[in-house]
Image (tube, rainbow, N blue to C red):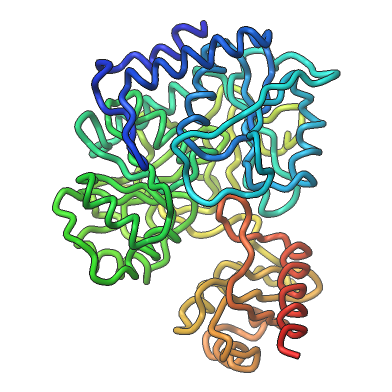
Length: 467
């Protein structure tokens, strides 16, 4: 697709005076278009053009979004790298892709808290860079919670098709809606479901400068937020805010990324008077299913959205795609004969077509000839009133990493599991800490070696601090 068609579809909606986004200050669509045009000229002076490959690593800000749109306007392929990643995490990926240009945050090299109105950046030509993969405009990485992240490439048509699937989802925010975006703009739900859908639909985007729950709720009230997008963690924190203002305009709460815990669902509904609606998708293709009617409760994912073709084989979900989304020939086992294997285990209602999550196909462990679904063990642990989060892995034995009240010990959790699980499913090792480590997308890490290293390191540091 030509660059003018690709970006104009996103930028040309509305008049110059229409509100585009709000954070610590508001930005109109005219101001957005002006900033994009200014940055486009800056990139032109650096030689960035149709077919250039650019790695983008900036702090989350309106400038970040404007820079991304300007690079796309120049016809560039943009590789998104989360600003929170350490060099050891992203440099091997950069070496694999070998971009021609680096657009990076200027100033402090450390992590940034919150969302900025503006942020500085530098542009640098890299030695030995190679041009863009033909037709690919957006390159992202999987969350990488277990093993090396997958390199995913999407052409403009793929992103525009996803925006079209959003538009076809009943109840989706539209012109006149004010959408509070809690997801990171660096990842797919925040970028496409939030930023790009709002651009295309005419909705106003609201991104809080801080994720402190009480301040988020106050901003929701001040802006008349009609829809909130986030993850289960966000909605859990919002439901804990006391003495909050009334939110009469709020009609929709949308969660993606992982399954909403039943407790979070119930607490948010009790506090805010509306359910959390699910959406489900993959970085490889974007939105696949959802239900914004308020009638789907955990572990339901909603219905396949118009434009998404799915099938369920042996309780595992497959999604139709024209081409493999993976670059450089990796992960060939995930894409065969036009179908992408998601590794998500689901049940599809034969009457309605609604999908419900059962767990992960790769969460199954064979122990003594018996198959054990490790997510089942996690769910049992999560029913303990002092357990906040749990990750269960299997190596030599079943091993549980538990985020819980410090008063909870391994003996207590062993007894809890023995009362609720057959002996083969009871973890042989428990590691208890206040909070479990998460990756840059906010998802729990599931790699056993990484989890053990971080949790045990934290335990040692805490023990030394108590001396």
